Length: 230
Image 1 (spheres, rainbow, N blue to C red):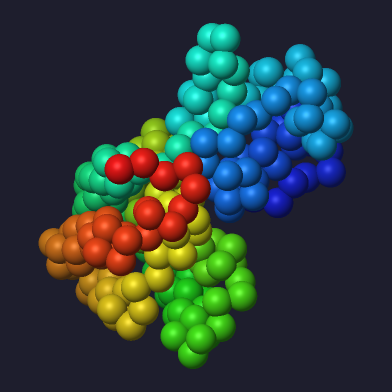
Image 2 (image 1 turned 180 degrees about the horizontal axis):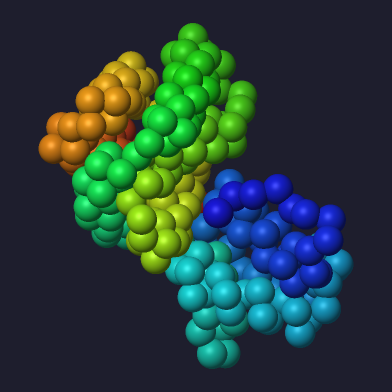
């Protein structure tokens, strides 16, 4: 989850959030070595706390660890993106059914509100302003989470959160904005939600998420990114 750091958070939690966001938004590059001494100084935290934080991020698939080699930021690859995309499709397509069925007026308002912010940001990007990628992805995430937020399963939502953030990392690193088509797909998802048409939403989601993988390979985006593999 991408969230603002709370002043009362313990040092370990603050460091976890900072490191996680630095990986998701590309400030720590794919394949980059994570040396404890440098991280200790940069994040102003003890080595013991750092090891605990890095272990959490290893479990999330954002960092790799090998004995004798240490920690490194997880590399990116077309194969990994495909696996993450398939998992995201599976989770969201499953969740829209119960979410659309249970969603009340408050849920509907959240879906409409998050879509409004995303649509405004996409309009800016279509006009050529790509200066705020982080906000674009935050709004995109908020909209997709709102769609499934009434599904009734805390475990499903937590799993989706982890998968979505790994997918988000690719979108940020590769600037994976598909333009008008993507914006129209978001409009179609909003319409399906308001109509409570889960089958239509599943069809749009499958095309919407899967197209991101095709977009990256067709445009050769992996070849221009450090830490990328075939």
